[in-house]
Amino acid sequence: MSTKSPAQLEPEQLLTSFPAIENPAARILILGSMPGAASLRLQQYYAHPQNAFWPIMESMFSTPDKLNLKTDYATRIQLLLDNGIALWDVLQHCFRPGSLDARIVRSSIVCNNFVAFLEQHPLLTTIAFNGKTADQLFRKHVLKDLNLPAHVRLAALPSSSPAMATLNRDQKIARWKAALACDQSG
Image (cartoon, rainbow, N blue to C red; front, side, top):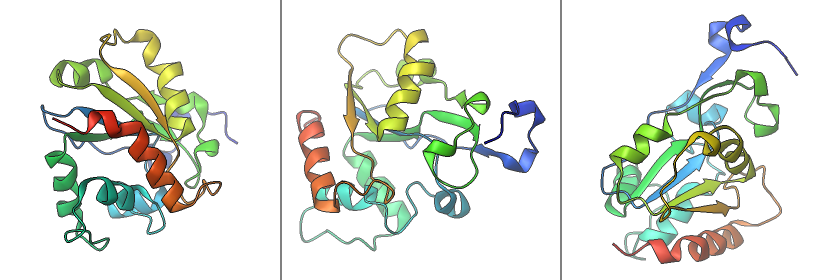
């Protein structure tokens, strides 16, 4: 594992996350750590075909007649927006060979601007973490400098990544539904 600072890394090695998918009416912010290699290549959140994120979202927010796991990306994004979900990553930049969060070079971490995000999303009630790494990174690098409103709760969710194999897709869906159930009504 490299111990180089961000300034010492080759420019093509420094990963950059995507802009937030959001609107001012968002009630839930779901945070990952940093998009994986497949997502970065396709420039889409959760693009790996075995990642459970989109099936979880479609299970939570689609009616059975609309459930279609092959839905195009723009339609998936609209599903989130229509249901008060914002999507982003804790990290804005980092160095990470491959896709595993365990390989993030800690000295290369640059977090996204959550102060501005919270100011622009006054209806936010929940910040949910897609996996332990997102939760840990937020708590270590962001929360200490953030004046989090008292009405905003933090919720740890099992990772939707296929690398998190201790739960199957149905178990992940059940845990996500239970954790976010109180925030689904507008």
